[in-house]
Amino acid sequence: MIGPKRALVPTPAHPSLPTLAEISVLKAMGDAIAASHMFNIANGAVALGIFLKARELDLQPIAALDLIQLVQGHLSLSPRGQMAMLIAHPLIDKIELTRLVDKAGGFVGYSCRIVRTSGFEHTATFTMAMAQQAGLIKSGSGWASYPENMCLWRSVGFAADVAASDITSGATALMKMPEQFGVTLSEGGDIIEGNATVIDFGAPAAPVPPTAPTIEELMERFSPEQILAANGGRVPSDEAELVAIAEKLAGGGQ
Image 1 (cartoon, helix red, strand yellow):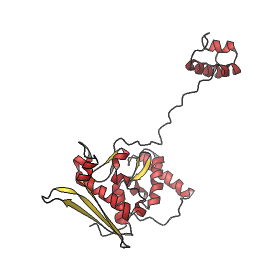
Image 2 (cartoon, helix red, strand yellow):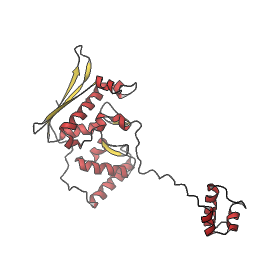
Image 3 (tube, one colour):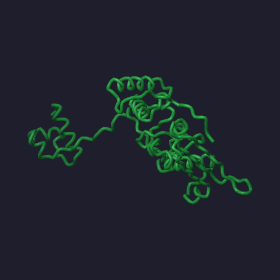
């Protein structure tokens, strides 16, 4: 059983939408934190996104930098962060984690029981047999290295889906199926970027290749003599030559 309850990261009441002044402050904070290299944050834009997501979840900004990660282009609360929210939330009365074993004492799986203050409760179980059936147990994976924790996070995720979906906003997918996002979980419930696509908002955009004009379009702007001269006296034969001619003549070259 987990308890007693203690506010994890209390946040003052705020309006549903942030003000421009608040966004400006959060942006400045994000820029400063990204420049400090104290956290694994690509740039200020990513930090700002984390801060705004934290605001929705009633997490303090600095705590959020440790609990929210960018996965497949989406800001996601790590399983450890989800658990922290459940433990601290005033509508959750208790969380019970039960390690399941067989008659010989061998590990079988985990069950998680979540009880709300209203009295509603739900228990979910995830076992190694279920993981085996789903094809999750592979050499070098978290299931091979720390199977007990993997079962634990799965059971919490499935229990939260029923008993606390309003608290987690249904965002338990990384607990239940991180493999579908190309990531794995550490033993402590943090996200390890496997094949996940992480967007770096600070990366320069890929250059867009120029579109080749047609010969007719060139002739509307330049004389045949200019076109031939720009191409070394030859009639253009492909798109690359058409692009080169257009760029040369647009720059005043002959």
